[in-house]
Structures are given as structure tokens and as C-alpha cells.
Length: 569
Image (tube, rainbow, N blue to C red):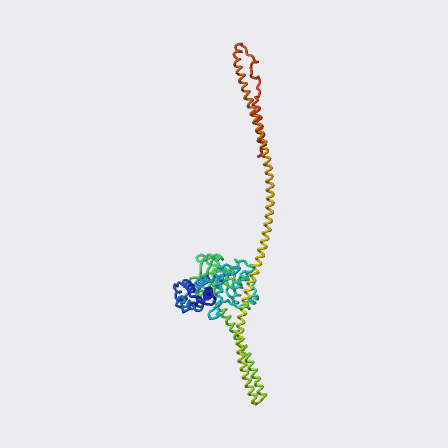
């Protein structure tokens, strides 16, 4: 199908150019087989790459020949009545395959700001709006006109809340008429967002919004209230309008789709007030499809008018074979070509007028000379000669104009190359300046870290001195405790000796007692025989006296209690 190939031509060229190693515009067939097989697989075609061996007698192909082969062998198998949604789906798949081939060369840059997914979205927008330009018989280029670049970049800048400077971009576009994708990406990442004025997440969301607008033909987004099927109540949804369908979601993140309404040329939309209160009648609208009628309500009159206008546009575009944004881009492209043709014709017309004026002036001069000379033959001959000379001058002037045109085109090409070189040099200088700034920031950060490290070392030194002081105090306390322990040990040994001496005294007393008791037993029968008991012979004391060993034990207990109280805890 020629329409799908037309939409995917620019992305296929990027993949073709990535396979071209020597930049000659020719790629060997063995590399093109892989690309052709992948594209054919996306379209449920297998073995389409085998025909490349028998296509032309050369071992390599230029892009025009490869495009012709794809048109005849691959895309021609698609039916002509394919829907717009299917075309956009196939186009997205082909763009993804081509992106995988050329991705390595396109995302290679010094300071990447956008993630690869956002770069791929910008790549698809670029391929949609760019033009395939012929540089020579073998070499092609895909370039995006400066007006399209300004339109896309201004929408991104405005969507993140920045102010778009149109005059500054006009100065840039006056020197650079067209941009390659690498230049387009560098313009966004370096010139407008390279200073870090916008967070990366915000820029990613802005690029995603541009991608949805251009590639997915999102005509309008917003909140509406929808009347339920079973209960006549209004419920709020987030609506996304495209030329072929109207989807509604639970929330603005568009993760959970609650339903989809298909749109075709038979649908119609109008304002309605059925079942509404007097103050709400101006905010109700109805969408009539072939299956049923859907009722919606906006929050204000202006929103309702915007939705009605957008729905009319979507219904009108639902029967088209080409996307709405592609149609607008084609109109802008045709307008640029018409303006260029008009300027060229205006230039030719002015040149022709100048030549006609010179011819008229020459003729008048010749006639004047002829009148002055009257009927002189020599004058007529001179006039004829002058007319011939003027005609020769006219021819020379035409040749000179052609040479000037060639020179102008050559100078424009050289100027464009010089401008491109200057712009690349400016980009390199900006990158070098950024590297120097980052180096200064790293140096300042390193100095701050050194100061913090010195402060930490000083704090650690103070803590170590305090710890040494505490350790010294602990050692002194330990020494005192050891001395006290030694003193207690000496007292214990002394008490042990006293206890041992007391025990020896007790033993000696017991022995003396036993001896006295033995003597008493011997003497007691004699006293009984004598018939009287003498009190003086009794060795038992008349009063209870405290034994000596009891005093010793009490002293030992008192000393032990005192030692336990004085022991360090």
C-alpha cells in the first residue's frame, strides 16, 4: 500500500542510512535482507527478502531502488481499504523496527537530557514532519523545515511554562533552512533546555504530549460528565478525542479505560436541554451514533462549545485515509512550496521586466537616433547594428542571469554548510563551557568536603583526648581499688591468724577442762564418802561468764562486715 510506505519512508531512510557505512548512498543487499525480512514479518509476510538477490544485477542498492522494491514486493500486498487505525498501527511497528536499526547512531551525544523513549517519540514526530530531499543521484537526506522545527519546539517550550522567543528563532532559521534529526535533538536539549531550567520529568511529559498530538491525532482532552446507561445520573470522566474514537477514563493518568465510542461520518453532535434544569441547559451536548445517543455535560458554556467544535472536526476526519496532523503538515508543505514558487516567479518576472525595460530603452534610443539621422542609410545601418548588439547584449544578459542563478544556488549551499559548521562549533563551545562549569562545581564541592573532613578530624581529636582523660581516671580508680583490695587481703590474713590463735586457745581450754573434769570425777567419790560436799572443790563458776572463743568470733564477724562495706563496688 503506497500510503503506508509514504508515511514510513523517512524512518526507513534513517535505517537505510545507518546501514550505509561509507556514506556513498549504497547499501549491500545482504544488510537490506535483514531489514526487509523484519518489515515483512510485521505485515505477516515471510520470505519477501529472497527477491533482493534477483532484483537488479548489482550487489548494492541506493535508497530509490530499495524503496521501489518495498513498494512492489512488500507494501503492495496490503489491501487498499485498510482503516486509518490499522495504518497507524503498522506505521508505528515499522518506525520501531527502523529505530532499532538506527538507534545507536542517533542517541549518541555528549550530555543526554532526554531518555531513549522520549528520543524515539521525537524521532517519530521528526519523520512525520520532515521531507526526503535529493542531494545527488545516489544520496538522499531527510530534513525538517525550519518552520516545522519552530512549531514543534515552541509547543514544547510553551507546554513547560517558558516563554517562546520567536524573533530569536527567526534569526536562527534565516541561516539554517532545514534540520537533520541530530540537529533537531541538539536544538531542544542544548539551546532551549540545556541550562537545567526545566526538570527532566516535565520535559518528558511535554514530549509525550507532542507525540500524542502529532502521531496519535489527539484532537482534545478534558473533563466531561457523562450520562449513565441505566441510571440517568451524570458521572465525571476524563475524555480523549481522536478522529476515529472518543475514549473516556476514570482519571487523568489514562490508565483505566472505562469505555470507547467509535466515530464515523454518520455521527452527529448537537446541543440539547432534555432533562436538565434551567440553569444547566446551556452546558448539555449530545453525540448521536448509529448505535445509540450519548449525552454529556460540560462545566461551562465555553467548554461545551469547544467540545462540540472538536467533535465536529473528529467526525469530519473519521472518514479520511490519512491522519489529521499529516493532513495539516501536507497543507503547510504545499503552502511552503507555493510560496517558494511564487517567489521564484516573482523573481523571474522582475528580471524579465528589467530586461524588457532595457530593450525598450534601447529601442527608443535607436529610434531617436534614426529620427535624428532621418533617412540616412548609415544611420539605419548603425541602428540595425546597435539593435543586433542590443540583442546580443540581451542574450549575454540572459546567460549572465543564469550564471548568477547558479552562483546564487552555490553560495546558498556553501552558506548553509558554513552555517551548519558554525552551529556545530557553537554547540561544541557550549558543551565545553558546561564541562568547565561542572569542573568548577566539582572543585568547589571537593574543597567543601576537605573542610568538612578537617572539622571531623578536629572533632575526632577532641573526642580522643577526652577519652584518654577518662581512661586515665579509670586507671587511677583501678589502682586505688587494687590498693584497697590488697589492704583488705592483709587484714583478712591478720584476722585468719587471730582466728587460728583463738581456736588454739579454745582447744587448750577444752583440754584443761577435760583434765579438771577427770580430776573431779576422781575426787567426787571421796567427797561422798566423807558425807559432805565442799563448795570450794567445785570448778564450775557460780556466775555465767562469756567464753573467750565467743569474743574472738564476734570480733571476726565485725571485721568481716566492715571489710565488705569498704570493698569497692
